[in-house]
Figure (cartoon, rainbow, N blue to C red):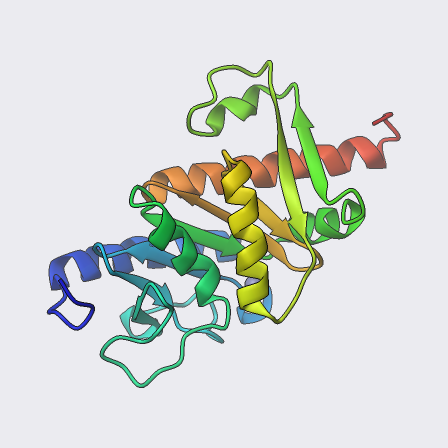
Length: 214
Ligand SMILES: [Zn+2]
């Protein structure tokens, strides 16, 4: 199979429709301010569909998506994908089971990524919702959400992510002053992970605002 082979257009339109639905919801929730954020789904063993950068994520149409190979290069299009495409495609390349990557910029995510930038991780412990992460059977556990320094050097960021994945398991990570990446085997699981992170990050910030000891 080659990345220039014909694309399954039924799968492409199903993926695009699902992404339009979820991005509109996330936009309404305030998680994609000012045309930020990007979203993708795996099409097959070599390609993914991803949002074109710079579009209002609350009003996407089928024309606001493009196909890329797992090196982040456009397939069948002159468009340029988002600079961050490499952070999506590295997950598809590494994990055949990853089917969807969601990247948002909510206020909670952005604030927490700065507040916890120095330890470089946000520890989430004792929450029932930890069971939302695939493979976690109990709330009697802790997970560490890593926080990477922001950089426009996407290959360097991707290399840091690879090291985190080596140490795995991992369901997502924050980038400082930027936002969250979350993924899953399909869009439902990726969304569940993203929603769980958003909720738990919000809880941690509320505990701090309320003066609870950490
Ligand atoms: Zn971003």
